[in-house]
Image (cartoon, rainbow, N blue to C red):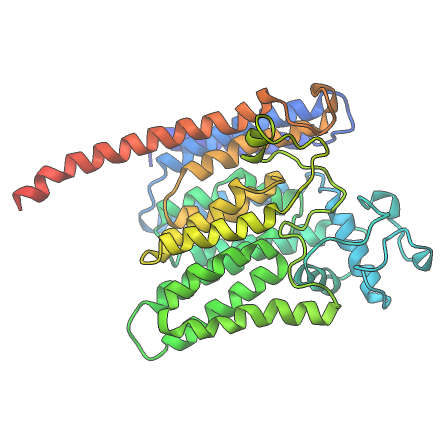
Length: 429
């Protein structure tokens, strides 16, 4: 491996370790320093992933060492305040109450919520999907977020190991070395790594399903169950249902399991199957969307920042995209999920991780550029930078979107040059 790789990897690890110095966002200017350090770390990551050459046991050793060290460096970081909501929802269930009916500050729960002041929106019932609520109940209740970090980092590492069965080492490095993944799961302790593990399982099973053999039904059923788990935990993953049906062809009836799992979780918790696709609280204003602000700032003003029925629009357009890629379910998976992110009315930074397994597998690296620029989202924690609290200004949208558009153009140009270079040799043969 080249000297540029080692320098880039060393810079990424050093900058990622430095994030611990800037993660207390109650202090003045700290969010700005955190974002600056994180984006520099992301730039080093892009260079390291580009320069990494995965061949032989030594490359595999470097791959896993860098991957694990990155997660270990994330453990000391302060978790997101959502961790306290996870603990609260789990505690509510364990004492026999319904988190969809009772808010954490309800009088019936007096004394059962030692960390009530830390719970975000503690006056509202939960908005998470039933599968996520079951997960919160299973995890032992403690006042220490480390157990969540270790469990979600472990799911992340399992996903990486399985991704290696679907692609080569050099490609998998784009996923494993990504600082957003390490920060979101081992650092901030978001539960989405469990969803990503399920999505990678879907990819693995569908690839194996295409291979001839007597066990095709087993891989189809396994993919369906994995997709069901993903939908049960994050309802938005239902956009992958149609591409999976096209992948399975005459085995599509197996996808009944993908519907049965979230339905079963909903029945167990007396909750609606989908609710809000993104698991946001209904009272939360729109935030950091990639597309709708263009419409609303020009022709259709949204003065009260309502969600409207954007969920329905996403489901319809994702289904249309899946049909367009009827004969190429791989692209259907990527772009159905891509549509969900582009049209999401709220785009938290960790939401970008949802598409990274599919984008890595498909080598759609522009999404990895977005995983770097999305760190600008954390500037919201310094509200003095904005005219209105938690309202994205044009300069911030430019920080997130413009580098990604530039990357898309450059990658498309590079691909066209590669195709042009190989075309004469094909013609001669």
